[in-house]
Length: 254
Ligand code: BJW
Ligand code: ZN
Image (cartoon, rainbow, N blue to C red):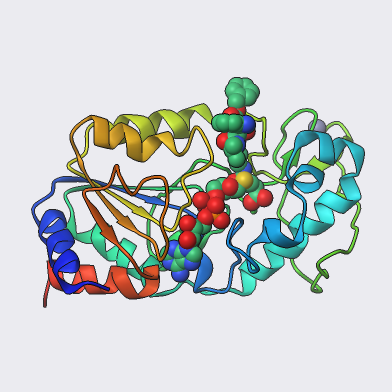
């Protein structure tokens, strides 16, 4: 991690009024929650997204899809926020107008103290009826579902159709209010901090680009290269749980 870049990022944040923190799966990697596209460790290395993360997959084999998401939900329940999540909450506490926008379906920002992150891709903890969208309770984890275990989804109390995970699958629209809030904030921020995303999935990947087009400084935290490298004002190469606390410590020394 380059000291000069950390200092430069800290200076941008310390004088900013409006800051958008845009996060992806790399944010939670050091909490033990796997990313999607990292070689060897990413979920899509072991599991086929077409068979698990599309509406067609759920229609074809609801037990397979529900079992896979219950396994991931129980793993997230056991995970703890890392120093990066805590640093994001600290940024929110210091900046006049902060907004956290996450593509993540976990609840680690909330548990680190971020009051109201915008979830662009939904949540593992908000299941709903696949037919009438009536919310269903996220069940308790009595046991630990195994990775490949099939599990029949519960039935909607209102219409008896299967309950589905409350996440956004490929080919589905993002929640409009969340996308509008994120796009509006990105178009009107001083700094956009993008953390731990490959920036390959649209329309979410448009958010940092919107900020850059509107003249904001874009600060990227990622151990590897991404398509946002040329868009970013500063590229901080390293893991979120190391880089973000260093930036916060330099921005607001106490
Ligand atoms: C670290 C780290 C550490 C590692 N610290 N960093 C062709 C071109 C353009 C678009 C399309 C296209 N074909 C299809 C599309 C559309 C499609 C899309 O974008 N596909 C692309 C993949 C090509 N998009 C959609 O389908 C979206 N919907 C849509 O377009 O709707 C149109 C519509 C309109 C109106 C009506 C109907 C339809 C929906 C996208 C939904 C994405 N869903 C998922 C799954 C969510 C549920 C689940 O969890 O299972 O969301 S896919 C997955 O990718 C998940 C993530 O949120 C998303 C982004 O991934 P993310 O977070 O960037 O993770 P990774 O793994 O990719 O990257 C991790 C990064 O972390 C890496 O860079 C590492 O280096 C880094 N890292 N350790 C910091 N310690
Ligand atoms: Zn229903």
